[in-house]
Length: 599
Image (cartoon, rainbow, N blue to C red; front, top):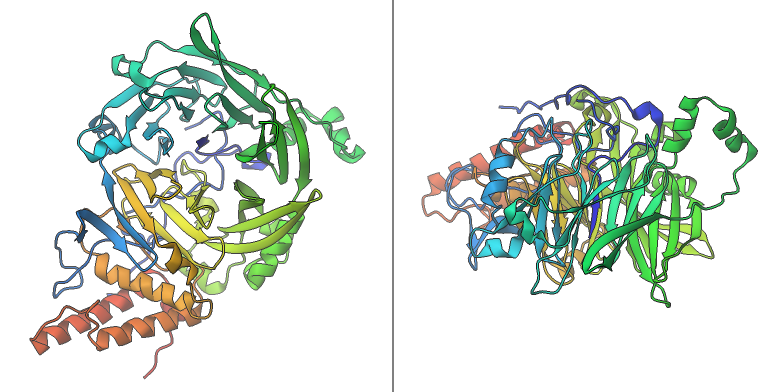
């Protein structure tokens, strides 16, 4: 289980300024605190109000009444409360949060306070942490009743407002897991068993990592039940190992050996002779923004992959306790070229304006799935409707390495965008592999996106309330994905056969029609946490085809959309309401200008 910073330190010193408050997000009109770490510009924007459709996809429950927004109990299938359903996926209620946690999150200010969390499918426990307190519970226990909540105080520095990194320590099935909390400043609190959390969790072991002033922790990753890897903003990797001494277990730590680089003289001289500010800039350029587990070695070791600024590193950690850097390469040039080739004119021709950045990675067999962010070229219509400048756009690249040479195999668009002016949200995008790598989930602060590895299928879930945030995504080998939010836990069941049957020629139009249909069928109940909108990079042709197909289905009284009614007048009224709602939905998504009006 990997846990990550809610907002890793940026790679350039010019990004260190953090706004005093989160800028509000502009709402569209329908037609009828100082911290010790810099806030990443890649963070998910906090939405200004629940009705904003900035980046949603699915929502609500089936409406079989005469009104488009009629309220009726959520559809239940085999005892499940459904929030959304399509050919490819179904989203349903999974479990409630512990009472103690719900009360805290209910009063939380997500514009001001940072929270982080995770769903550990290996131990069966979930976790949510603020800068002060960490809550742990067995999420499967919540299916049968109120789960037991274990509460711990977090390590923190006097000027630190960010939550700690966290990792659960798996034991046998008959024993509760242990817990590691690691502050941004490098202070560790270790509990061998979370059972002590029922008594306040005051008995713990403290360890201090050897970080220098100005160096901060950026990631924490579980390699196995005995070994954990931490990374820093200065390019260091730490190995944490559970050892026994005197009948008690504690943590030992040491830093990976720094590799010797063949640095050019022009790059070396500034690090020696320049001023302190230049030295800090060089340090930021070694920020480790992500780490991931790689393949096991033949000698019982493990490969660890890391993103260090624009470079990819591969380390080998041995069971004997040593580490070795086996590969390092700058991939900015090949990724920039691949993104520009994939998206054409939507990407600026100037690399400096594109400003591509590596965000996260996961290992998929012999390939790497790398999440990148870049500033896309904006057309005039988008500028007018959105009212803001450059958007950060996301894409997934699959990369392979042969004889230490990296090749970009595919680049796929991620259905999510954010803006630089809304960069203060406490969430850094993270990816998880599901279904043996065939599906990739991307966790944002207010949404979870899904992309297929083998076809162009992509969808997303977003939350309608500003009081709701994504806190964790858990993946299982054969089971559904679990999504932890500030209000509930949801289960996402994926149909891999339907995903792989994605129609390349008409797929985009079908996704648009599916989004609109889901909006009609699932958009009426206040207790559903989801809302939805059209994909942010929607093209005119797909929008037109999807809208026409749905309009035709409404006119033909498709029983999946129009309730059967022997009263012709009532049925005609419902058709009119559905079509009127469709136009409002398109306008709310700021794409009405792409719709051609035929007389």
